[in-house]
Amino acid sequence: MEKRVLIIDDEPAIRRNLMFGLTQEGYTCTACPDGISAIHELSAALDKGESYDYLITDIFMPDIDGLKILTVIKNEFPALPVLVITGFGDESLKAMALSEPNTGYLDKPFEIPQLVEALEALTPGRAQRAAVEPSAKEPGFLKESVSAYMTIHITDPARSMEIFSDINDMEGVASCDAVRGDVDIIVLAQASSEEKIKGLLDRIKAVDGVEVASMSPVERPKLDRDVKEFIEIYKKSVRHTRDNRRKGTTSYIIVDIDKHALQQIFTTVFFVDELIFLDVIDNGTKLVGMVTGGQATGKTPKVIEKLGKIDGVLRVREAKIIKMIDA
View 1 (cartoon, rainbow, N blue to C red):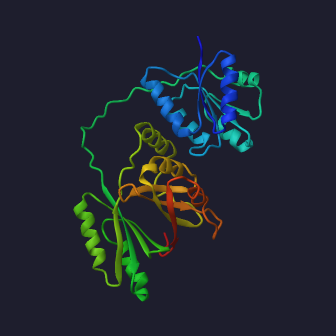
View 2 (spheres, helix red, strand yellow; view 1 turned 120 degrees about the horizontal axis):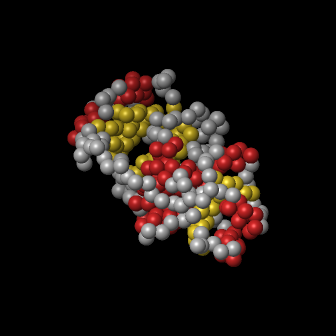
View 3 (cartoon, rainbow, N blue to C red; view 1 turned 180 degrees about the horizontal axis):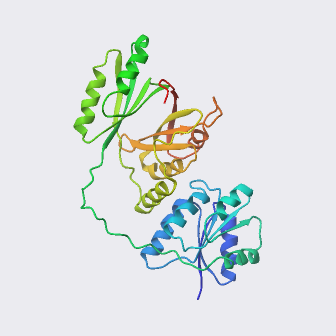
């Protein structure tokens, strides 16, 4: 019986060589150039009642790196053997890959016999969806909160600290950050209804020395089912939360995009290590996120440099957070 292999590598020549070599060895192969297309392929195969016996993935790819794919795959399909391949690895990357069960590691360049040997050294298994436990709660039992971003100009600089404190202490303000950029304060509002969000907006507008520049409700990103499920599993597996602020400089990024490229841009940015959280606003034409710059004060975060190279990104603005209140 032929064994099916899913290959993920962004280099066309490597994909062709791996497919040709493994086919000669009796494997049936499908190759994908990036993480998103591989997610679709894996899901499509399962929907057709088919499955893969092995996954081969490079680490460095244009959208989702192989270690993040590995994290999700091992959570969703723990029995699937995975072989990580890379031409730029080190002992740290190797240790991270091999920390996952039933995972192998192979440095490029290699010969096909070495590849086959590495695959066959893994415990046989298949990509199969786990049974979904029925929910104990009725649909609609938990009501999701409504969120919105508000950007604010301070028109009375002498009262900046007082204004910041007044807004920060208001009910419904989930986060309040003084920033250095096009505006002075960015507020994330959360409430149980749109009416309560509007009520908070009215209270902020009533503060002396304040001008509200914008108010934008947070939207669900319009992603394919497969990608959405992948992101949800990743969030759970790495405990990705908006409160996970790290040491060093921290900034908001506001990204104007072509809404037709939302999925590609959102997923590429979402899996960047510097990202703390990412939201969609303004009918899918803007992304708002928070990034950490690590310890390198004054340097442009790598995610901003990466954004400038993505098709469909129209404009990127950074608003550095100013620490006003000690935690």
